[in-house]
Length: 211
Image 1 (cartoon, rainbow, N blue to C red):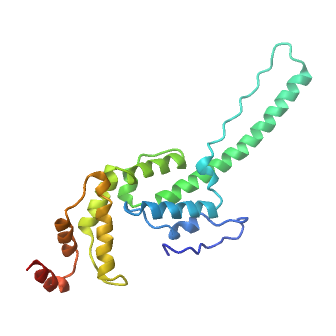
Image 2: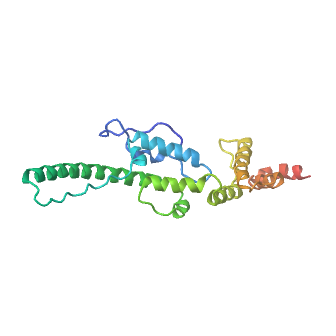
Image 3: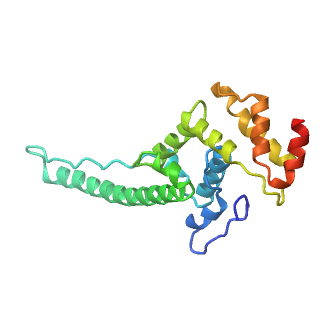
């Protein structure tokens, strides 16, 4: 369940959690919830013990040695043996890095709205992909502004667990995020948006307010 801090441990993963099992704990990235989404993504990577791949570059293949002219057999054998050892270590680390990177990218893409995923160009590394997401949903990003406006226009109050006060505060909070982008809404316009988001049982209230 999204928002829960109880992640299900998986046997066979020493000291960690199954990364794919963490997906349900991560809220779907819709635009206005980037901070919460990123916090849950970071937590999932840490618990699954793959967070290192975000800060660790892909291992570099060691350069194969070339035997020098007149190099003694013993000296060449030592250098070749050292290379083979480095190559074996590289193969193991590279396989480990590629696997972790692939898993992290899969988790990220499965916790983002399809329309948003389609607007982000493909990347080879999870680090680059996270940076592109961040650039879209922080600061003065036009994409972020579009998502906020879309959510404000389509927001609807459905009752349920949250009250009308929480609904109004939520819409006001969304509108406030547009101010740093020089897209601040007039109070009167925000009020009309809030009224438009209310169901028919609030019609009398709206009429009385307008009068």
